[in-house]
Amino acid sequence: MFLGIDWLDPEWLLERFGAEFLWISLLILFVECGLFFPFLPGDALLFAFGIFVATERLDVFPGSPLLELFLGIALLVAAGFAGNVAGYEIGRKIGPRIYARDGRLFKQRYIDETQVFFDVHGNKALVLGRFVAFVRTYITVVAGVTGMDRRRFYTWSAIGAFLWVASISMLGYFLGKRVPWLGDNIDYVILAIIGFGGILMVIEAIRRRRTDAPEAEDRDHDGRPDRDIAGFPVKPRPHED
Image (cartoon, rainbow, N blue to C red; front, top):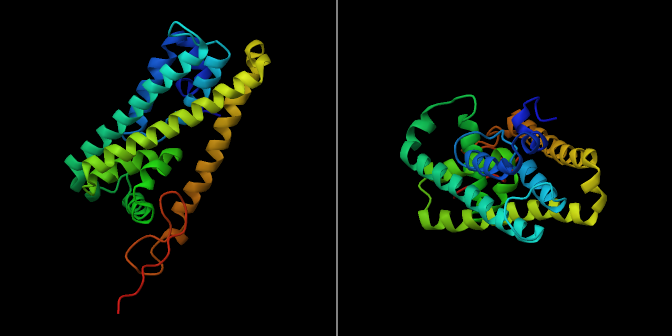
């Protein structure tokens, strides 16, 4: 389910590293949110973090599980935001070279589709993009490449980081609290995490099919793709008189 790679599996990370799971998660979120690795399990890690804290399988800080949750969320938000800042500054620094190179990950069409996503959603793009795995990597870099105002980017990236981390981590936490027997039935915890990750993978596969399909090309000849990086259709530009 996690592509056969052990370190993509939150359960494996917890079993292998114990309390270090949180610090490893911080590193993974930082890289995923800014350093051109869009295939990391950020959502699954956040969900698993919440479950692990609720079932008291993860204990990093002294105090109650709720305090552990809030402190962990604060650190994870900081890591996600720091990754955004790194990606944005890299985009500003090497923007022209990114546009000039049509690689396997940073294809020109993905950059164009991300730009359309920005054009349609404005500031909200930095919040909405957080909840789509592939998009949250691209949108950060494209914001830097296009020279988006730094204060505007930092502000909305911080809001997006908080909403993303807090919502998914608390979802896992409250599932763990509402279903107490998860703490004594670790197999069900693993199934819950795998199930959540599986749903995300299906959503991502659908999104990728839509953005890579011929229908995403500029078939209305308005100078931009007909679908954005999230897979949603883009209305044609109004014709100028």
